[in-house]
Image 1 (cartoon, rainbow, N blue to C red):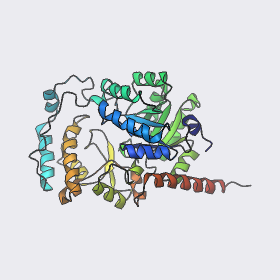
Image 2 (cartoon, one colour):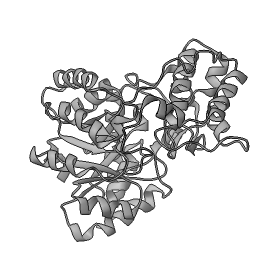
Image 3 (spheres, rainbow, N blue to C red):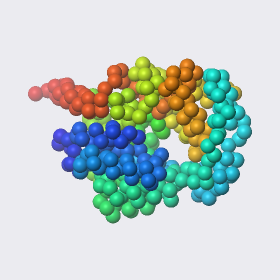
Length: 379
């Protein structure tokens, strides 16, 4: 394609794919796009293993990593003891989760067996994330992205010294301006349709709004459109508005290579675009996820107010890990509770495919959409 991001990254198609699964990352990169690995859940040791594996598979083709360092975080300074962290979770919140699981036939006697360490949430702080960057910069990554908030100055400076562009997720016009002023190179402009952390403005409105706001920066800042984009025709629509490419996440969750558990894959393939909900019940910040008995419970009138990030994760992570394990074994109650982050585009994800098939479908659908659009011009 004749495209600035294709030229910059040496790729065939400006399709950027976020995934926690290294197989998806490698497959998208090898198919002509850019795979981006979600790294926030890794230790430096496990990230080293993942990136070495990707290096071997992509053989010099471009891929990136995605971190999550929010500008607003409860106890952002760190320094809490394990006991301090545990104390931030009120007993009534724990009882609410225990009761919810028990109502669905799940034993909760061992739910809190794994005690939190004093390093809980470190990867969400600049100091902890810097250790992951140490590992990443020892590999030939082509992009580093911050998924929540303006990237720390140290991230931008370290990446720039290596000639690596920095990206940041953007859910509002004012966020875009702060990112551009900070020196971010690529803005992932994500509408409310997106899975995971998202804002309230639709992609169709947010992308042109941000592009207009970025006019003073000229071509220095590129825009990737995101939010509910699961087809090539949606990609074409966003690029017709001025985006240089698209950032995708949800569409890879039902692929053969994805880490998504079978129960949730089945739910996603059967879901409509109305079967998702924005909720603070998973991370403490609003995320869009598949509606389930878990999400319904956090919207119930008697539900406690979700805790701030990162402490809501102390409730949701052990519970969701238990739910996922039991759901895979066929537990009926766990299946009702099972959920995962996914955008409204889930309604268009109707058949299981391989990652390569999804990329090929994007390319074909995009070409057909551009042809239809071109045909509307008078000769």
